[in-house]
Structure formats: structure tokens, C-alpha cells
Length: 306
Length: 247
Image 1 (tube, one colour):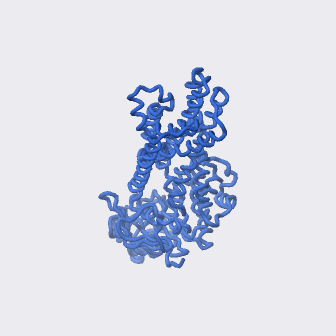
Image 2: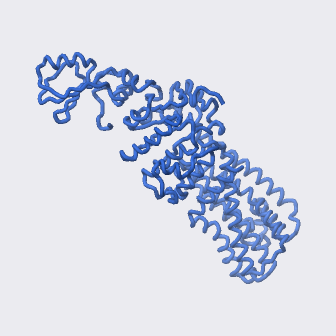
């Protein structure tokens, strides 16, 4: 089968009753890509994934999986999807669930190898209902990869995991990608998208707001972060947001060069100066805050989610 | 085909891991056998009456296994996110549906064992090997309309509604169909009504096979009619369900 894209949506809209969950969305995922789908709750991310994996059909437009209709079972042979962690069959044992999903594929990974990769060795005989939340979460991601899929679709793969477990999972996903796998994932954690995704698609209210490399998305938000230590810093012109963390001060500005000039001429005592581009998080908040980026939007960046 | 067997095997595993569900399916008919047949020497001690009672109770076991396993089982599965995950695997709905039916059939057969054992050990029921083979085949066919009824209920109702609906349908239908008391004891009006029921129709077929007598014309026709109607209902319920949840 030859096809340019592993997954594709062309002018896809999807209504639920009177609610438009997706509005003329175009998307394509090429072989070997690592794509992060970013958007607030209710943005339409899950609906888009459901369309691409054949769980639902679009109201209008067209979706393709490996060049065919995702609803045809044969076209899903190269697909791996994470089940919802709450949905695992509770009475079945871990190795049974892995084996069951694996047998739907032509050349599944050996169960022990997969479980080892996801830190689940020793839990083979446990019923899935007795696993901890983190273990269940790792099992769901393992299930997406058991069939050596060409495309893995992961909806919130690490939600609810502690930092260490998250890094174990990222490592497994990077390894999968390094061996030629294609990844499409959504996440609440911007850190996760920054760590994993080469390409970022920002979705809000059923529309694609931005689609490009991480650097491109960040550049869409024309701000720089100027960070420095100072005991007393006067108000400076051109600062759209100011944050204090002890004597560490972070200033968001549209023109870092001008701000530095102002800073120097103000005569204020400072040290440890650092200038950086916007983080993905700032880009995300700016893009999803009601259309066009404004100074006020940048100022509402919520640090608590980082 | 191999995927169908895979699904059947895992359905079976999931079901037997909840022992109380198994005990309910397998134990109730045997309990009824003890209560209505063994405890009553006029039935249990009389070869003809005991054989009839064992046949009727076997049919009840099969019908109840199908209706609970499919009615409640499908309603339960539909509510689980795992069910949605299965739809992302490279397999069509036939394997899952076929696996469910096969699993229900296993439990129907399992539920026959205690009934048969009770009949053999504690009553004077008797049947030749040929009659037993014929009745087994008749029981499997007789279960079909009730498998469809179970599917129609399971695909139409949420679990909390499916269980009482199965119970409300099963017991009155079983009684009026002559599965607890032979129809010869029915008043005339009940006997007339009884002939229109699917339980009565398949009962007459099973008893015909068990006693090696021809069942007449009415029973096969009524059984075929119900199978057709319930089969259609099951298909409609399945389609509507897919339509409602997965548009």
C-alpha cells in the first residue's frame, strides 16, 4: 500500500447536535513524524482522534488512515491506540490483555519484552483491576505499541503519572519513534509536548489555530522573556508581564533589545541577565486566548500548569 | 475465525472470573430441579413425568443462560470504554458478536450439566443415547430465539434496565410456556395462550426430541416465526445502537 500520509483529515467538520466540535479541520501526519496536538479541554482533540481511528465518522469532509477509510478493519492494521485507563477489563490479567490485543496484529512484540520496556515486569499475573493508576496508565500505552504500529495515537498518555514514571514513558516513546514509528499525541502537559513533539498543532473550539514546528509555533508569539536578578527594579516601558520569584524577576516583552537598553539606562542594579524566546506554554496560551495574540493575553499566562 | 475464537475465549475468561455470575447461571436451574422435581415424588419418582420435567428444566437452563449472558452481558459491555477500544483494533464487529454468542453457548451447555446430573441421580428420568443426542441438538436450536431476545435487550437498554427486563420476561414466559409445570395441567385459556409463546413452541420441540414423538405443525411454525421476529429485533437494536453512539 502506498500513501503519502499515515493519517489525514481534509476539510473535516463534526457536529454533535447543534454543537460544532470540529470546524473544517485539515491535518496530515506523514510517516516518521512526532506530532503533538495541543488545546484546552473541549477543543476537539479527542473528537479528531476518534475520527482518525474510525470510532466516529465526520459530518462533512474526509478522513484517511494509511490512505483508506479508518472504519475498514484492514486499514487499522498499522494503528495502535491507547485505551482509556478506566476501561481495562478488570478481571483479566496483565499478560492476557497484552496477548489479546497483540493477537489482532500480524507481528506483535513479545509480551515480556513489552512489559519490561514499560516497567511492568512482575505484574504479568495481576488482574488489571488491582493495578495502581500509574501502572494502568503504562499498560494502556504498552497496548498501543504491542502490534508494532506504524502510527501510534496516544490520548493523554501520561496524565496522572509522577515525574519519574512520565520520563520512563517518554523514553519508551522516543525509542518507538527512533525505530521509525509515527506518533500523534495529545497532552495536558506542555512540558510533554515540548519534550516529545517536533511538530505542534494547536486546536481550539474545533479549529486549527497553528500548525508547525515547535520553533514556528513559538515564533508566532512575538514575545521574549527577560530574566534577571535585582533588588529594586523600576517599572520599564514595553513590559507586558512581570513576575517575581524571590529576587529573580521575569519580564515578558515584545522587544527585548529595547527593553535591555531601557534597563541599562535606568541605572538599576541587576545581575544574572538571561534572554529567552517564549515557551510553548506562552505560545499556547496566547494562541488559544480568543483569536489574535494581544498583550493582555500574554499577561494571563498561568504559571501553575508548568 | 481465529479472532472470533479469541474473542470467545476472553469473553469466557472474563465471565468465569466473577464466580457469582457463573453460580447464578449454572446453579439456578439445578436448584429449581431440586425444588420442583426431586422434592415431589409424584414427578421425580415417575419415569415419564421425571423425564418430561428434566427436559423442561434443561430448556429453562439454556434459555436463562442466553438471556442473562447476552441481555445483561451486552448491556454491561456497551457501557465500558474497553468496548470502544476494541473498535480501534483491526477487526470487524462480527468477531466480537460471534465470540459473545459462542461464549453464551458455552454457558448454556455448562448449565445443562447440573440439571442432567440431578435428573440422573435423584429422579427416575430416563432417555436413550439417541434421544439425548437429539435433545441436545434441539436445545441448541431452541436457544436461538432467546439468544436474539437477549441481544435485542442488551443493545437497547442500559445494564440497570436490562437485568430486570430479562427477569420480568424470563420467569412468566417460562411458566406460561410449560417449563415449570407441564401444559397438561394448564387451564384451557392458558393452554391456548401458551401456544403463541416462543417458550411453549420450543418446549414442544425439545420434548418431542426427548420422547421421540413428532411435535406437530404449530410448534415449528411458531418457533420459526419468533426466531425471525427476534432476530430482526436484534439486528435493528444493534444498528440503532451503533447509530446512536458512534455516528
